[in-house]
Image 1: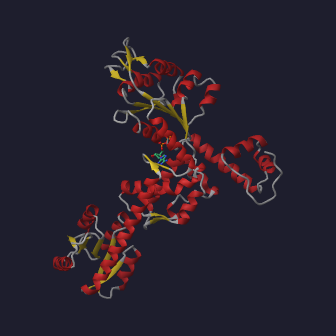
Image 2 (image 1 turned 180 degrees about the horizontal axis):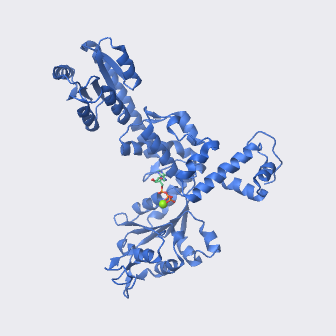
Image 3 (image 1 turned 45 degrees about the horizontal axis):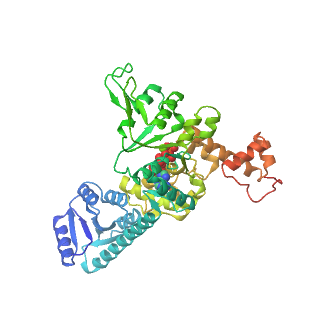
Length: 464
Ligand SMILES: Nc1ncnc2c1ncn2[C@@H]1O[C@H](COP(=O)(O)OP(=O)(O)OP(=O)(O)O)[C@@H](O)[C@H]1O
Ligand SMILES: [Mg+2]
């Protein structure tokens, strides 16, 4: 028997059996479905290279079956059967994604080459995916994708420190992969087979943060009906990751500092001093030095945490990673959404390369996942991307609303500065006058967002 498997969808039993028998003589293994629903169930489980589909079915229309198969498994080839000479149906089926068509009654000698070429197509599509997977593997480390020098730098740093027990502070804008890096460090450490516990410092109520971290004894506060172990105890022998460390209240900062110095603590309302062996990782998207200067973050805590900082670059500073990330995300979305998108069209990729991604990789993930859901063919097209991504004029209506307030403000500010500069042909003096901003501030913002002046036009002489 040949490796490829074929599904025959036809409501007539005799017809199915005939085809099946013939396929067997040609050494092809096949399954049968007598209606549309059954066909879709089988396709979902069967991994067929080819579906032979009669469009006249008793339950769902054959066109709907065709659309469903092509939507979820675009690499599966569909050959439709129609009554002899029914060109309208044939045309429609081809328009809706059928790979080929065939007239009934069947002339098997003519059908064979069609099946063979369909199988060939299916294999080519699969090979493409495998090749991409191999390429992605080559440029990734623990699911962290990157081939840019900046990311290689990060990979090397991780490898260097993972095995030590040192505290690591991961810095970077929202969506740059801080949590992913933290988990990679843990999984490459000597504690890899122990727990990795995430502690989110951003909860609002002080008691909740404290009790979540240190645990509490029964009766420690009104709702403390039972003794509860804190995350520190849960993480014993493993790693604890303090996410959004800048959000810790002053009070908890003090308790946490003591823990970092002595590795000792008490549960809330408890007298017993406990000791745990945990490795500490922390992350923030805030500027801790600035918070320190504003006396919102303790100096001594900062120095304890900042033993080995890892600064993650924003995506716009390593755009060469975008193509690989896009492929990686397409594959992740394929398995999540049961789709088989093969890649992205070049103009759509160019479009993404031009975008500045204020929400970094998380934003790219949202964009691609949505596109994978919407795509009608094998490749993502520019139509599948949010229409306003590249068009600064209409952006106001959407992308900002998909971001948290702080990033939305930054995204807008960047677009604003860029557009005003463009409107004044790159003349900074005119642009900042128009914006009502002072020149230093305007230039600082340009630097912050990596905006350079448009090349053409009358530019003022500008000292840097
Ligand atoms: N280099 C990368 N390769 C592949 N996926 C990545 C990479 N960096 C981030 N991601 C993915 O992007 C998403 C956001 O990453 P993560 O949650 O680690 O970011 P974060 O910096 O913690 O963001 P936030 O500050 O918003 O909490 C995750 O789904 C993660 O898997
Ligand atoms: Mg995070």
